Image (cartoon, rainbow, N blue to C red):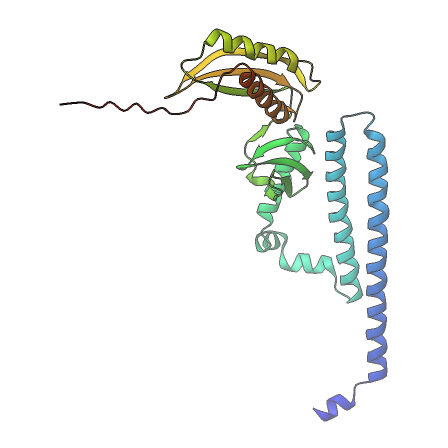
Length: 275
């Protein structure tokens, strides 16, 4: 062992290690510089494209372009690192076998993700900024990648959904949305009077720029155990339906209070039987 150690030229070994370390540092620096320049170029291109297409579509294509560029750049980076250590990537791939590598690294799932993501983009099923339901998750699309789609839930949770799990897409952001408000009134209320009050509220609410059509009083929707349910429906711009519903509920409650119509509540009647 001692003889073997004595044969090592430590000065030359340290020099080689130093050269390798410098090359690695240089490659890492160049990698981050190229990545920054590439992302900036992609951003500038799609900022101009936003004038020619919808903002959501431009952001989606920008997201996927960044994704492809990142994978391509990472592949080149790994190739340079292998070359520093004198590893021949082509020999490594041929020796292991492409099929063997595909199975070993779970590439079947990866290919499925990429193919599904490609068709999602090709068919324009979702865009960045859309409110969608996919794989049992609701949220706003933040990014569409080659492998995963990122959804931001309304509670702030960021969901990473593999593209192969997106078998059905419910896009809630295409076309006008519907605001629906159900109002309960007591059984002893004059329905015609209550309907008139709601119609007056709807006339005032129609001035809201977020409302595209209506709102209108549909009429009696249901009979409850202690109330009658009246329904109001209107069409709104995308993403505005929740705000419109809140404003309608507030305005209707205030109008009913001004006209002396109370909120319904369960009533109990006690009957005393005398012997």
